Image 1 (cartoon, helix red, strand yellow):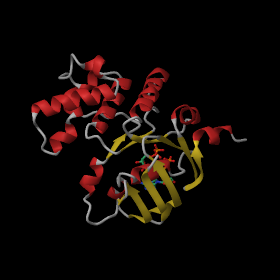
Image 2 (cartoon, helix red, strand yellow):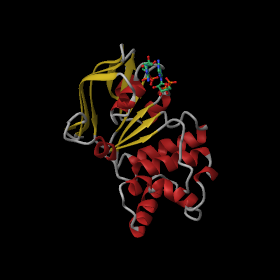
Image 3 (cartoon, helix red, strand yellow):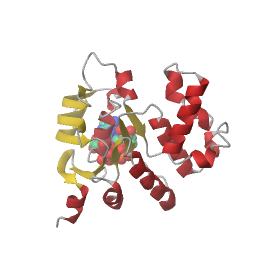
Image 4 (cartoon, helix red, strand yellow):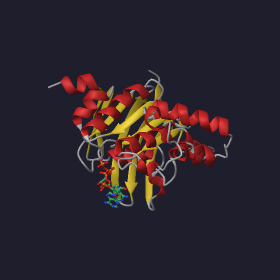
Length: 237
Ligand code: ADP
Ligand code: ADP
């Protein structure tokens, strides 16, 4: 598959503390790449850099480059806003907005000034179907998102993240706060979503990485120490 993301000799610093050391890796299109490794090894930091979320923190800096679909995240002519439209993100603690299910899904469209009802209705149905949630919520789209179960709230966050059809979907420990059944449901969903989206997932769960990723990137102390096809990584001695 062609590369969707290229991380090119990337270093990242929180003030004096270096958190990422010379990472190089490509993320192929329409595959799931899992980032694994012990707590504090830099998985979230790397993932959040793909969205430039870390740049919101004071005193951070980077060296090297990250390109999405050939465009550098640091290209001064590209606005961060337009970049974020190309990248959807889902967090460990599912965090729907205190709004209806419908308004959660269309949030990013409203922000962009897209308010046409027929368009929004279509996006809501398509996104909720893609997130395997439509059948469960189609009769209560205008109820609060907080009435949903944890697993449903996380799938709603996935629907919200893909509403704009991003080129890449970042998932930071998306199942860590969920029970095993809700977790399996999200894993199944990811296998469906990769037909349409490129996915990068951070997980500390090796089984999860081996069950549902195509490629695995193993990090240790800020370095990428192994990277390749999941089948090979998990069968080598
Ligand atoms: P992981 O996701 O693998 O648990 P992180 O990316 O969260 O690792 O953290 C990598 C390193 O960077 C850790 O040493 C962590 O303490 C440090 N770190 C993370 N966020 C910050 C921050 N906002 N300020 C300073 N150091 C941070
Ligand atoms: P995770 O392992 O899921 O990244 P953490 O508990 O390591 O979660 O971090 C939670 C939050 O605290 C993150 O936003 C991270 O950036 C921040 N953080 C982590 N380590 C530090 C640190 N040494 N100094 C400041 N902020 C930190």
